[in-house]
Image (cartoon, rainbow, N blue to C red):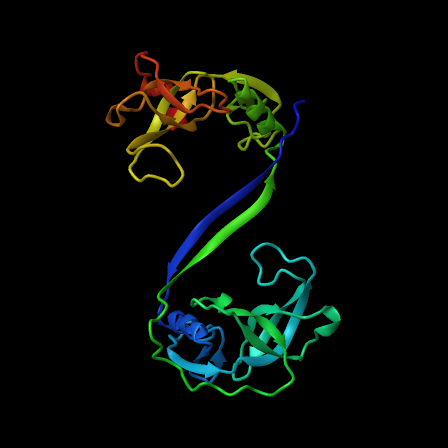
Length: 313
């Protein structure tokens, strides 16, 4: 059996979202070191504010300032902070009910150790030195011995409202493709495409999955397919992706390799994009030291008959 592969993988993208009037006021307030909540029809003040009452579903818009001081309602100690968390040294995650609020805000508490944290302790906001209109304008909470801090008296009308935010979404993990796909990837290194045949329905899966999703039985019989195949369906890409050195428009297609029981996807090259068609016969094009085909190009063969690939659409 071939070695089971594994590799670190990072999925990362900037997530851009616009803000409604309530969230805009909340983040604009943080930039000005003001914490705003929103009042409900029964007199509760929700922090962070939401646009609709979670109990009645009524639309909410009555903003109210609350104090930057509050009480810890529950907590958990974080002994090993991760990249992107509020503090680089061990800290406590806390839910804090700010003075004047009826709900709790989740954030970090800078404390010397778990023995220094307790439910019911008093805390206050430590503001970030530079604020941009984001929840990170609250650098963290810190222990505090006093009562409610005075309010600024400002609840709206801040200059230059924050109308949108960009949040960096990132996921770091170790990916292992498993036995079947490890063999598939190893085969690609030798410019061979390997699938696995189901012992029951005899369908050849490419890439292999280790089991037949239709019959629910393991697959172990390796089958080499291709290298030629047939375009079953395709789309024309007109929007250029970042960090992808391919000029638009180009064609991305589902390709049924000869001998495979389902189609895989790949880019079509060597032909004008508006001449790509269903049934087009193609073959892989490899670049030097590549671990997978760069694209597929026409073979010059007659187009495949529809009946030969209609079950693979």
